[in-house]
Length: 285
Image (cartoon, rainbow, N blue to C red; front, top):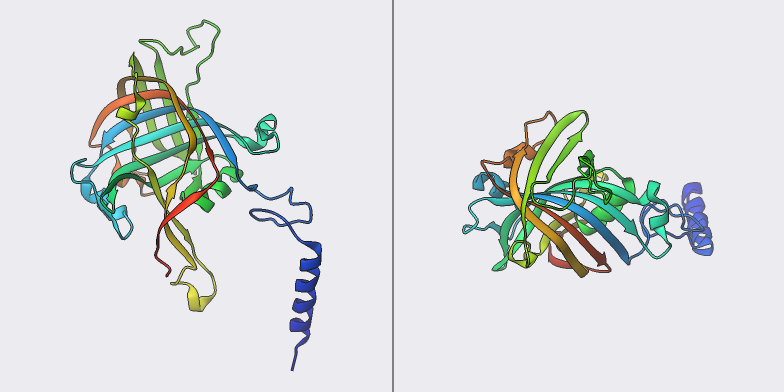
């Protein structure tokens, strides 16, 4: 016997097919304009502060998903990134900075997958909900945070932070009232070839659980993915001395890969587009 609820659901499904609700992510609406993230292509441009450091190799190994192994040659090498982003899709989103301008901070640890050197992203924070939605669809484990970094300006001033020898930059990450990372960089010289430093693909774990009790331990989506960046440009790369602190904070575990030793710091510009994603391994299958 068909219940009233089943009849109502069938009617709503038929109506939904007629209405053709739209959106790449929720919320789905007839116009599709309320979705947090639109369909690619997605275009990004940013100023970046990056600190090279070495963490406990055992702590890095504990964060890696199946099939991803520590890079023994790296000895716990990692990079901590701070980025000041401007985003646009295909609808002139860069003219709506309140929605699409944002800041981000994340850790990348060096690892090996299928014999290939990679960077794996275990922690990432961002201050914009649309960036969270785009990140989750790719596999970045984004959480909301508060991110700041020194900006450069063209008008000469002690506050301008020009791209020049001796300029100093700072950056910080906080979440839920707790400071999670602080960095300082002093520029010393330009790097002609950024590929000598930034040359590994970024790999993430795309994971979506389900709440239905029978499937709470069987996520319908559990994949190892690789970020694909079209038209990648890394420009104006400067290197210098650096400091990085990652204190322990309640409710967070990023301090497990805090620096044991800090290497060099970098200031650079970066841009790329995203149109696709590579699935390396399907754990759910």
